[in-house]
Image 1 (cartoon, helix red, strand yellow):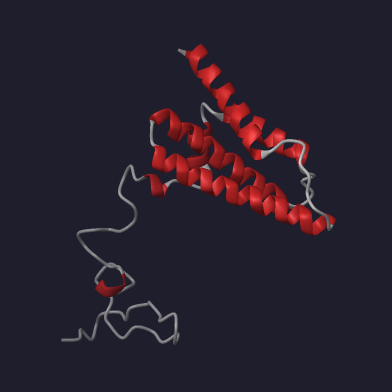
Image 2 (tube, one colour):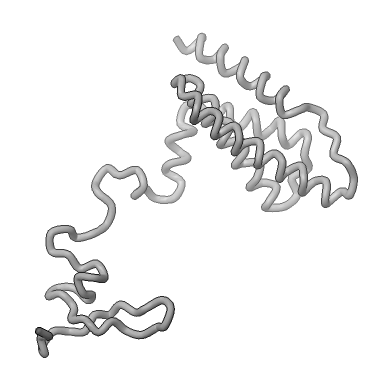
Length: 164
C-alpha cells in the first residue's frame, strides 16, 4: 500500500526523464529499487581497491618501478616528437603497460604479462600511426620497440639483482 505521508523517490529514468512513482524509504531520498537499503548503506566496501581516488592506483604501481616508466618514456621521446596531448597520453599508457609487463614477469604471471604486452603494443601502434598521419610519410624509428623492451628488461633484471 502506498504511504500518503512518504516522500516520492527522486530518481528519474535516463531514457524518458520521468520521475519514479515509488515512495522513498524513510531516511533516504530514493526508493529501495533505486539504492535505499537499510542493511547496506552503499558505496564500495572498505579496503576495496576500486574505491581509490584518481591517481592512487598508478602511484602504487610505480612506487618502486618509476625508473622503468621514466626510462621508457625518455626512450620513446627520443624517437617520437610528442607535440600533442594524444601523443603524450599514448606514450604514458605504453609506459604504464610496460611497467606492468615487468611486474607480471617478476611474479611469474605470464598471462597478465601477455595481456599488458598486447596493450603496450597497441599504444605504440597508435603513436606510430599519429606520427605517420602528421608527417605524411613512412615512420622510421631509431630504435625498435623490441630493442626498447630488451634493453629495459635487462636493466630491470640487473636492478633486481642489485636490490637483493
